[in-house]
Length: 137
Image (cartoon, rainbow, N blue to C red):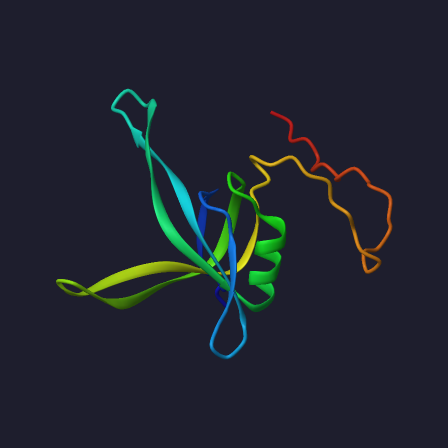
């Protein structure tokens, strides 16, 4: 059985999240996000390039939580999918894309935070992880 996976996007919030409602009354959060870009050089070092910017949208509970918890500049990790859609413009129709976030959280590698566990969390002491036996060489 294969592991179920989804597409992910790692980036930073480039514009303040905006909460809207669909015609059906569902919450919809939209924002621009930036994605850092790097180029690997022949000597093995990396050169930071200009970030790319994209549209991101979330719906329902993910929209509510994104709007409540994220601010411009926050680093995030989101899972979801890319949605392509057509927009009529002056020169004809243009295909655009947006990342639809089904789940989103702050990037733990770049964000300091405190976890507040709910009542559903089981209180248990932290224990050391058992180490495998040493192999004699």
